[in-house]
Image 1 (cartoon, one colour):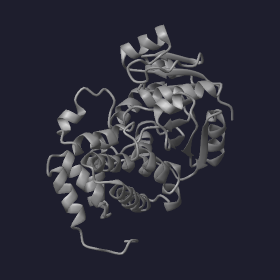
Image 2 (cartoon, rainbow, N blue to C red):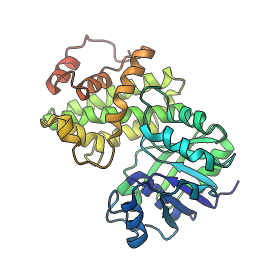
Image 3 (cartoon, rainbow, N blue to C red):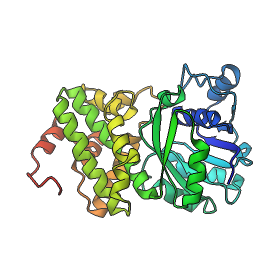
Image 4 (cartoon, rainbow, N blue to C red):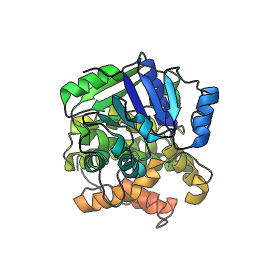
Length: 332
C-alpha cells in the first residue's frame, strides 16, 4: 500500500502543520483553504500568515481553495473545525474516490447529533476507510519540526500501519491503535477540560487545583470513552491523557487561554472577540454535556464548564459547585 500524494482539507494552524509534516515525509501535498488571504500568503510568501506566522512551508506543499483539486490525492487529512466537519465532507464527497482513506484530525463532538467525527464520515462518505489522528501536539511546534508523538487509530490494522509509515517524519512519530472511539473521545473532551484548567489558572487557584482538575478530568474522559465503546487503555495514551496534559498546561492552547481569560474576569464574548481560530472546547461543550446526560456518565467538571459558557453560572459558582460535591471513592 503506497501513498505518494496527500490532500489536506482545512488551512488553519493544525491543517497547515500537518501539511508541513506530510511534505517532510516525502509526499506531494495539496492544502485546501477556504480563506483567500491564506492561499495568497502561502503562494506568494510560503507562509500562512493568518494562522501559522513565522513558519516557512516545505516545497512539497501547494495550496488551493477548490476541494475538487484534491480528487486525485492518494489520502486525505480532514482538518476543518469539528462543527463544520459534516458540511465539509459533504462538499468533498463528489470528489472522493472509493477506497481513498480519510484521516480525521479534528477533535470534537457534533452538536445536535452528538456524533463523533468517524460517525459523521460514515454518513457523508461511506466509501472512505477511516482513521483518526490525535495526540499532544501544538501546531506551531509541530510545524517548526520540534519532536511530537501522536496516536493514529485505524480499525484496519494493515491500512493503519501503511498510514503510520507514510506520515512518519524525523520529528513526528505516530503510534498505531485500532480503537477509533477511544482516540476520538479523548481529543474531544480534553478541550472542554482545558477551559476549566485555564479558568483555575486565571483565578489563581494554584498548582494543586490544576493537578486535581487534570486527574479528575481524566477520570471523566475515561468514563465517557468506555461508555461509548472505547478502551480505557486508549484513553490513557497519547490521544487522551497525553493530549489532556498538554492542552491543560499551556496558554498556547486556545481552550486553556479561553479559560484563563474567563478566570481573570472577562466575559465569554470578550474572551472570544477577534479570534479567527476556533476554541473547539467552546463549540463542543454543549454536546459533551448533552451526551453525558444522555448516557448517564458522571462528568461534573465538563458540565460545569458548559454551564459557565452558556451563562448559567459564574466562575465562582463553578468553583463552589465542584468543591461542594459529595465525597466519594476515587474510582467512582
